[in-house]
Length: 239
Image (cartoon, rainbow, N blue to C red):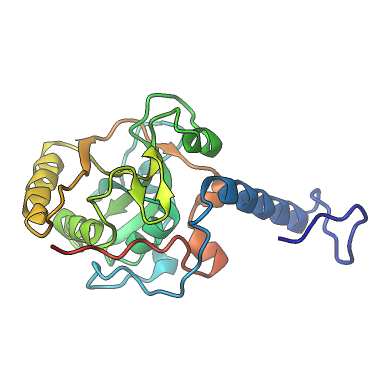
């Protein structure tokens, strides 16, 4: 990174202007991300998740699944359903699900913890118990929950506890947060079947979805904003 200059360089944008504010937010996001994701900042020009057999038009995918907010109740649009997955760095994970046809909207946030209104630095400090999570709203007539589970298993390594690739910490754990008994049963059956593909034990947690705390704005749809595929997820390990 270039060192800061005391004098304002040519083309300097005031943080009070719209362009300047956007630039300031981006700089702040990168600074925070480097602190919390020391190795995840690697970029890779990779395609959609191999677990997705169909590809959605990302521009048509929304960013407000279930009306997500700061721990507020989640209510999908009529006819839609919700799903939530944690599989490491949520930048790459969200991008994976946004390329699945039938996904209506996604957002990244924090789930499975024991504190309210967690911030990214707090989650990175390992004191909140939250996992970096992707909340997905989907149309079950176009993509089934079983297909989303397939994407989940195929886009990360579920046998590494509190770690995905170079990212280490409880916020990077593998987890499925379920909405109702049907999803819970489907997730458990899917994990039992998936275990047969591995020598190592799958460490994925399965628990009812509690409060979802939407992450800071600069984390949302990060790959689309930057035009790159960041936080490439680890290659799935077979048996």
